[in-house]
Length: 371
Ligand SMILES: C[S@@+](CC[C@H](N)C(=O)[O-])C[C@H]1O[C@@H](n2cnc3c(N)ncnc32)[C@H](O)[C@@H]1O
Image (tube, rainbow, N blue to C red; front, side, top):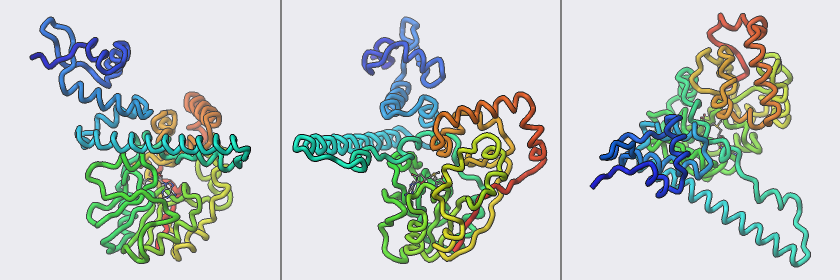
């Protein structure tokens, strides 16, 4: 029996249009690799498996570029894709069920003439930022070996390590017993199949007894916590040593430090309004802060990573993997990127920042807190 399916048959079975399949082919996402006996292009079983993954991620709202990164990842086999899709769909179903229940409660309350407070109305939709933007993360966010070396050295001889706000696990040391904590279902699902076990929890309430770990680490996450000081105290409670990679937002120094926030994105200031001074963060763990310079070719696409590669900020994939761009809003983002594009084309960026091109590292406010 011919196992190859024609384009029309695949479209019919999968409930997509032939046009969609042609588009996937054109952009290199899914190419029918076989031919029918009559010589027409056809989908082999492996193509069909790939299409199933593509459609699964599509149904979850992932963009086509992100899907391409996910399905091309050689470390994720078909079973791992199915497990990940299952986890994400179950989470989506549970959230929809919770929303339906909340709407029912409000309808019932209204029928009885009871008014709900604005807080109650909004809480229903209070999804986590990383459940919305997390799918774009793996495209450019990965371990930078120099930053990793600093973090791992600070962990000292710790054998058991808790990684709080672990995301996809970029900085988890492979030679220690790591337990990850991550509140976003999307980020948990994007962790590689062989990553450390991950608990669904948040920094403010770590589900572990006092002193459970030799060390606790938190990388590029503290600025997302509703109460950073409370979260850091929690880390201190559950671990004897604490290592935190974060950002120094004290005063207005940050404004001049980085051309991107100085010349193009002053809205960054709005994100720092509630950010505790560095001294409060170090006091929460009883430790010290050390500067971490950003290498010019930083492999982890964090906000500051491209200080010497300004064209990178014109790339949508780079921006989508950094929460700052989503948090400042589309208007500020469009304006900043438009201005940068013009300045790069006119040579104005180089006029202003040309001295950076001769440097290998930059001090942009990144700090390692160690206790
Ligand atoms: C920029 S990512 C960093 C992920 C990872 N540590 C890394 O270095 O790649 C920020 C992470 O913090 C997580 N996060 C947000 N709020 C949190 C909270 N209250 N407690 C713990 N983690 C949180 C997000 O879900 C996201 O995975």
